[in-house]
Length: 240
Image (cartoon, rainbow, N blue to C red; front, side, top):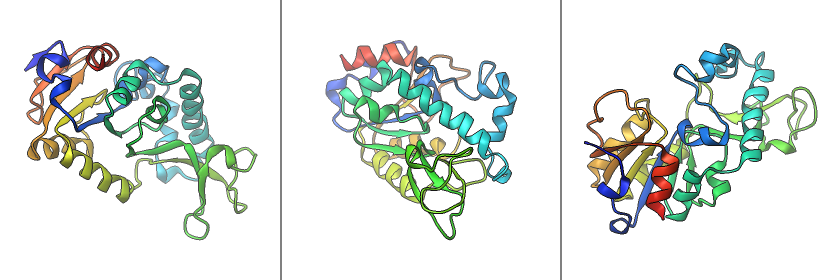
């Protein structure tokens, strides 16, 4: 069913183990656009595609730093949104598809980054070096270089064609299996692995709610309810 208030279907005081899955939509208010849709980056700037695919490495390292490095700088300058802060306020565990670090900046402690972090860099030579560290520790250059060897470095985000970190996946499974309220925010939740998180949470007994500003169909059967509204307002009101 569709509702306008999260408190209507999930009063905060009823839940003690809250887990939120977040996608690009939660960071739009920080100046970070989504990728899909008519206003998405792929539509407005098709060259962004070069920064998405692992099979283009190493020839697209410049695009990786431009897109992902630029996203990190934008997020750092803007800071977390009210929705990020609301999740931190209620002590929610977070599983995020985002790489912008805004949940940690808001004060969330238990954060699983499914797609890596644009604030980290890693050596292109995974087999023989494997260095990974803060992006600002990468060796100065164009593109930046590995801090331990002579190879170039890249942002430590997961590209198309790369496997998700098994540790992050395991942590996500543990969080959704232990929560009593599961929220999906700023994401359709229809792309794996996000697509199996809500069903897993529901099967474990959690109440599942999708918060969506622009729903494009009926409520996904994995969710008990859908709140139609801007997550910035919905979560701020609920957390207060």
